[in-house]
Image (cartoon, rainbow, N blue to C red; front, side, top):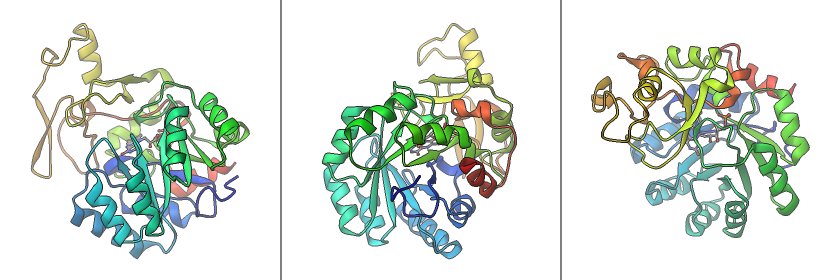
Length: 312
Ligand SMILES: Cc1cc2nc3c(=O)[nH]c(=O)nc-3n(C[C@H](O)[C@H](O)[C@H](O)COP(=O)(O)O)c2cc1C
């Protein structure tokens, strides 16, 4: 595998996992031979600059920064170009001007897609590779197609390297993705459940305990990002809403209730903010992103052990 898909030794990428993917995790994965990713979408420019510097202090290996194009990202792309970040990944859309800006600075550009049409558009915009996200994936999910069908469909048509994302947590999954035509894999959920991830212990433990049916693709945790389906664990907030008959926004139980405070800001029920280590509050009731691959995750392990396990 790999075949030039990723600028690292091994065909394994850590997908962006929001604030749970701190510098420790990203650096550990890069040092283990994979490609770590900083979730850059919601960081201030100063925060993004200092995070990139901190990753560079910890590893000389290549790393990636992800930007979600459902939000304004022009200034962040310009900053990442100035910083000559080795890999920039885009998701939730593609913009030719941003791809060109990133590539003109020497960055490799990967675009996460959920359909054949989006993949063709990404290649036409100049992407160096495409990350195919299947419906099994954790976090925000655009896909309506299972991973293997999507990867196979793209492999039959596209000539750029494909990276498979969604439902992969071990070597068997990685081999299946490879057989379907992927040159590498990108995993999110399995890296949330690592020692280095900044996810709150209750979130990691819930992933370890979960079966595939314990995850649900929903629009429920929409405070902060509306109309963006996401796969999460069925937690107390989800169950309470279900028991209330799945009422619409404005009539959901406990709306506006403050569950935690993060950096001086209130985190309310139905927020898209997941719980991180060191936070206080009703953390189990916050948004616990996880993919169906949670069914395959039995322990919280060091990130390097996960990278090795993905290779068999
Ligand atoms: C906690 C979490 C946060 C995520 N945040 C992002 C993000 O900021 N940008 C993005 O493109 N994808 C994000 N994703 C989705 C990943 O890019 C990827 O598609 C997914 O993790 C793959 O499925 P898996 O979780 O089964 O490995 C996130 C996933 C998780 C689990």
